[in-house]
Length: 379
Image: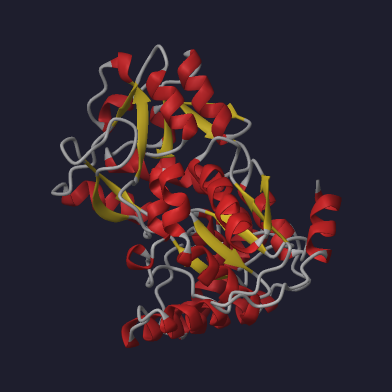
């Protein structure tokens, strides 16, 4: 698969600029989540729109784990990765990224997609579960190699005052496999974005699907949850399996998907951002959550900075404010602090590496006046 990806990058020869100044290569590639997920489905729909508008073929490479999605972009084998909440952990260099060979990732975004969906804990509808506390003793999926998903699980459990020790964690090879396991009766609950093919399948399955509400007025619950996932925000979703404007859900707002790059090619980033944004109307009907690619739904102030090429387009579109620029500058400054702190870890022994890095990271961020988020464990 990666040999194919190398070949794809070699085809990144720009076409002549179209009348709207979008100059895309004949072949473009990015990685995404499993087949059947919302991110994968949106990618396929975007690919068709780009093919129809510019003659560009988008090769969508489905990857099962967080790092397997970012590694091809990091190594220059594809220009982009379609990511999710793992973007936050990669940028910060924590969880599985607090390891030799990884650390804080020098990534920037082209598009941070907002939507009317959300992240939540889904459960089999046949169990009579109404709140997070009811998960005690139940079987919850744990996707191997996906620390972002597992952090979400911990965050949702924390909302109800629970930990992983209060439930039975069941290892799963992928996100899609976990949802199939829920349908088959192998697990009782798993974390998800409320949209996507695998979610619709679970909802239509013999056990059905129910979302656990996270009441917005539960201050203590939200404090516990955001203590694990500080990038979660309060929202009310109306898009997803079983959700509508007449049946909303109070849950965790988090952008998804997030299109990121390592190399930040200003011209290509500009054209990709503009090409997608210009043709949202051509692909949003194929996947409801894809409406979040519209400019007015972009999340311009989140936890990773936008690339210069993308900023150029959003400025051109009249959507980039002084406040957005200030937030972007602050994220760039934070990234610089993290990357410089990581250099101190060169040659550090593997034993105790994560603890040492978290200590170095915390001091560097604190000295620079930035919040730490992930404190090192007390000795």
